[in-house]
Amino acid sequence: MRTKYAIAAGFLVTATLATSAPTAGAAPAAHGARTAAHCPQLDKDISWFGTNRAKLQRMIDERGTCSGRTGPRPVAAFDWDNTVVKNDITDATLAWSLKHDKILRPKSWKDTSKWLTPAADRALTAACGTSVPAGKPLPTSKNTRCADEIFEIREKSKTMAGEAAFAGDWNHRRTVPAYAWIPQLFSGHTPAALSSFARKARAEQLAAPVGSKQTVGTHTIAGYVRYYDQQKDLIRTLKAAGFDVYIVSASSEPIAEAWSGGVGLDRAHTIGIRSIVKNGRLTAGIKGCGDVKDGMGEALPYMDGKRCMINEHIFGIKGAKAWQQQDFRHRIALGAGDADTDVTFVGDATGAHLAINRNKAELMCRAYDNEDGRWVANPMFIDPMPRKTGTYPCATAGYTRPDGTLAPVRRTDGSVIPDQTDTAAL
Image (cartoon, rainbow, N blue to C red):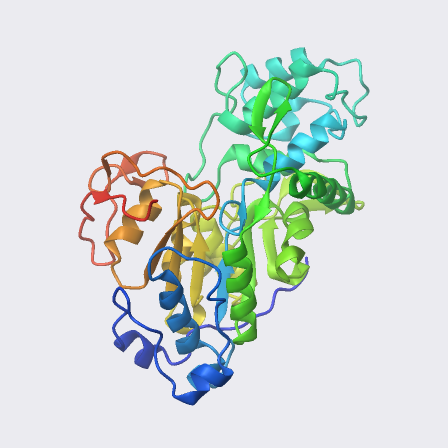
């Protein structure tokens, strides 16, 4: 396992947090001539929603090289899919792999996930057959039934017949079986091979016109991916201002690594699902986090798991403590995400919480409540979601408990966030 840099983010915390957050229309904090002449600036020709560019610029000026800070570099962490890029790189990689016969038949489909149901095992066995020897490629480019079952389970956690594909107990704030199942499907390949599949999918997706679709089996899905200009510019500016910038994705790490270079980030700054490798090849095992041992995906970079991965791999915090929110010096300055899968680590940020609006309840409840005055809610930069009809059910069912049931979303002091109206929409 490679070593992630152990650094801290909370310099000048007392002074910074005592300063009120910028109001609508506020300019970045003034630093005299140094701001205009020397402070890295977000590109004013790239549009942001409302006053969001100014809010982010203020955070960069407060925490970056123009703050006069000393000590460790501040940290920024970004989710990937629909946060840095439009659409989903795991779906793109799986689609490419199914079209090019890259899934190796397991000895038993039950070996691919501890939560896979007998119904899913039967459906996959019937659709994909047993004539191909174990460890050899399944002909998914021609076998539509097989491709369909695999993609339906990925997409809906159900078989094509509508039966549950996963069952059992898991912590719903630490993992989701369908996310773990993707790297598990690539067991038998080397990490380099999986990265090569992702790079080939990347080339196709970037070349496809915006808005295009593709067919996988009988499923129609997005056929293009684009880097967001705003996020590329934000990452560039953060790096120029002295921030250490990371990607924290629920994609398989070799897949995420094939894409993160497009925004200037290397493998050491790319955190994803970490498969256990034996004899140079991926297995169905997945590395744990904190006090959760290696296993079959019990702890992923998902919801609270993203906090654990950041604490462990960036700040060097081990054991059960890695699941806990840390002191300001051991928290990220900026967090960016688009879904409830990101809400914990985005909420941990001490300088700015950037929420890309995909109408996800807990994330947007917290963004619109804006408890600390540092939430930045922004519509998707390409093909944004429509304004949500009605309100987010923050006061009743916006929060996902570890057992999967829903509950009210609460602030730090325990008070309930009232239902919120969708305002960061075009």
